[in-house]
Length: 154
Image 1 (cartoon, rainbow, N blue to C red):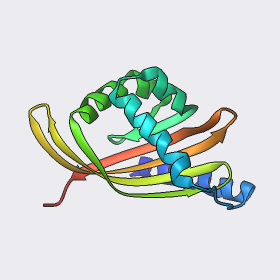
Image 2: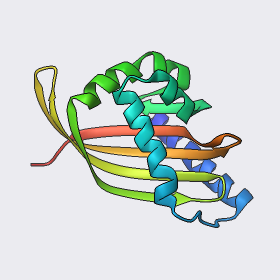
Image 3: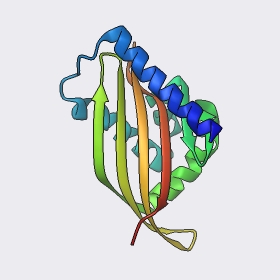
């Protein structure tokens, strides 16, 4: 619970700092700006393309999943590979997505249905993702991503 509270505080502080420094002027076409970055990241995971995934993350990115927090390097050398195997075996459908942005920060919340068979187990999950993207000198990059899932309600 302490880690979750810290993560929530970090995200809220990041967002409020960006709004305070940059105003809250929205970016036009937010779906077209940020969703392709997240789609490219998912494709890099599925295709086990570590270089592509790395290029979409900031150097200080944090990945939260399974109750833990990993640095970019930790994630790419560990969960990245198993996430790719899992996602490549699943049928993932986006159920809802909300994109918010300021001049230099964006956050995308997505709820997806994940169904399929993995390790001889049938899966029917509801997944939530929160991604925070920041504007860098080389374009928009993922600064933090948090994934959680649970069994879908029948």
